[in-house]
Length: 404
Image 1: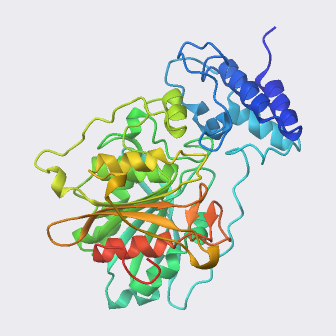
Image 2: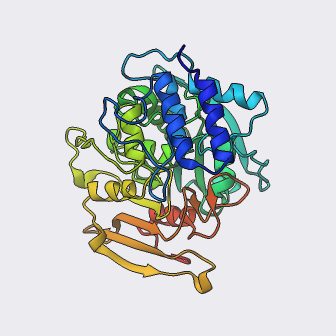
């Protein structure tokens, strides 16, 4: 009789408690093989050595969310997402396995008088999504732009809004901010499906939904065409990259935090590899006819040097795809008395003096939104304020300003 994936995950949890991460990796890889997502540990068909848990690698369970969409035609005996829910319902704590914990409960955000945080839904031929929309109290004076915020795995719009503090910045700068929601019905771990070819295309899948929502809000609220932006964290950061590639005429700039390069994966196995920093796919150039590379959106990238979920080389790969390299880093800044994280910033300027590309590598930062609020999940309050820097970059073409 073949082992049951549930039993294998139970063994992994037991090994984790015993302090044996290598055993956890081997067991979970075997469970993934039982589910049809990958080959057994050791000499699999892919020829890859078994993954190890270390400073620059992601434990296999972090991509459990991919079990709903196997790309090689295999049928799962029991989806790992179902396994996780079964175990958690039985009282087993899996928070120690990255990607398997419950999302942090998002507090109800205080609203300034006259502002609104709407709960709405958008539908089009490609699908439908719920979204939260922040309309600042200052909107009567004319909105200065629209930011589309794409959350990471296990997060919700409310959680992401709390963690990034973007609503407060929207109030200050008269911005409209929309947080589309990815749910467990769309992906087991509520991740944007950045690794599926059908969700990396223009006029199809999730990009079509996000673009349609963007256009609707832009037109309804009379946002200038050059003041529309998109940003995201992790899987949301990878999807923000996809939006910039597939709809370059729609977004003036994109913000990527702990994300991955365009088309860096095309199935579950290549997604595992990409997140570990083992990029094996060369992203194809994607350009809309009539729009050259110089016409694409400006890009700002943040990544933590100690990110063990999405390897820092993924941030470097995004930067390299836009013509940047580590040799062009312009300056390094260290926080006072070690209270704030230092960072290295790379800048490429355009002919008009604006920054076409900024790349921030944050020293010692984990897989978390830099400078975020502890009220949200996946935040690092010690880091430089990524939200404020992104807003400055979006509106003024440079992140330079207080705290930059």
